[in-house]
Amino acid sequence: MEEEKKLDVAFMQEALKEAEEALEYDEVPVGALIVMGGKVVARAHNMRETSQDATAHAELLAIRKACEALKTWRLVGCTLYVTLEPCPMCAGAIVLSRLDRVVFGASDPKAGACGSLMNIPGDDRFNHRPEIVPGVLAEECARILKDFFMQKRQKNILT
Amino acid sequence: MEEEKKLDVAFMQEALKEAEEALEYDEVPVGALIVMGGKVVARAHNMRETSQDATAHAELLAIRKACEALKTWRLVGCTLYVTLEPCPMCAGAIVLSRLDRVVFGASDPKAGACGSLMNIPGDDRFNHRPEIVPGVLAEECARILKDFFMQKRQKNILT
Image (cartoon, rainbow over all chains, first blue to last red; front, top):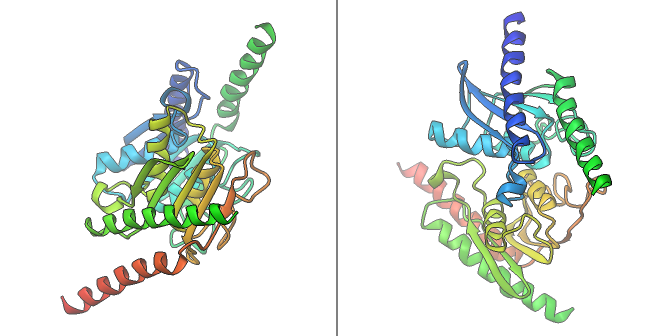
């Protein structure tokens, strides 16, 4: 159990690196990772503005990449690490892809669908219920978002 | 209003053609269309098995195609037609993409997120609420699904 916690922290640090990568594209910094048997099988960050694709959230891109890498839509045995609580779209994709576990960092009181506004992966009317682990490196994951939005606001005031 | 109803039926018939196209790939027959100013800007059908992508639902593919065609993630002024009530993933994508309207055919009591199990596009905690029109050509849209699953079961009994 202690070992699992250490691994979760280590992989969330990797997901944070993906979030930092998003900053280079001036994208809202959210990063995601999919891990199977201790190995990273997919990594992605939010790309909505750059790709002009409404569905290009970090988690959805990571799930699609993992399906491609593993050549199956069933991500059984996989864990998703994401720096921000998934929204309804991503939470729905998590259920559909049969992920075993979801570990997230910061909670999202405005759009979170894994415990905040609703709990889609915990809804027993669906045929799959992944384990949800909230709050891993929550402060670091929230800070990168807060800093991003604060800088955006400052730029808006100055320009 | 009467004119809008006629258009909705005509476009749902087009979405049904997409569902029929899915049958050629032995995919669960669900079809979707995105229309702007009376013109079809994207069309897609379920491709989960063929593409081995857990996110390859008709609606999500249509939304991604429409974003690409219109070069924007904001599908303002667009209507989505889909033969089956959207699931949580697709309902979440509908909210994120700012679609004006969603017209669907058959309800989905097992996974529907536009009124059946939950109502994501009608949730006033999100910053966008598209108009939802349920039940257009509902019987035809349900029948193609029932026939598909009945044939699947018969094959399973015979083999």
